[in-house]
Length: 273
Image (cartoon, rainbow, N blue to C red):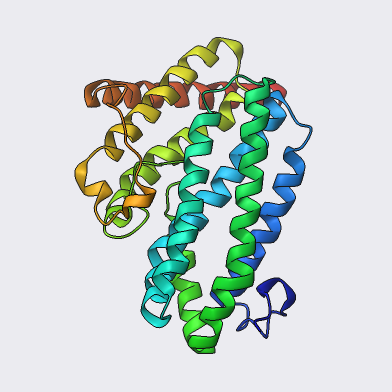
């Protein structure tokens, strides 16, 4: 009988550096964000969802890159166990992609949000109650700490958006990390600015964000990004919505928009001073 990670102390989990402690901390934060989602609409919901994405996707990416290969190596049924979680991660990616195309306040959007919360909760339970106690049994306290440092390093540079086309396993997900992380974090900046941007900048910001999303999709469709994929987590993708040329133009426009936003902020501080 295994003891859930949720019911163990920091010391029992291997100390502050342990990957299990880091996982548990993220899970507690995710539970709070899911609670905040209930009853929110419009910009409030968009802000909470952005926080969920920035937590969930780097977290899962680091698991798939660092932890699951170890579990497949040290556990007799590690392949089966990690594949089940990879399928949950894939469904989360597909649900978020679908959610981004639905209008606020519609019944379908509410259904997708409900399913997203359910899958995220199932993922946490599977990891804390089954996967991680099994890993804990097979590796040393020191190894848990080393895995924690590696997992944190990968999480800090991982993509922050849904990418259902990209492989859930190396080498595809590892190759995809850098270009998608740069594009995703650029979109994160634009989305935060949009929440309080002057009205005259909103259309330009939306266009740049959409172009960056298109560039991300173009990256996803490169064959190398899907290498190592298990057939049960593969998504059949369409063509990229924008060309790379358009994406580069959008990136240049984004630089101009960001410069304008910075200029406005500086003028406001000068005027208020």
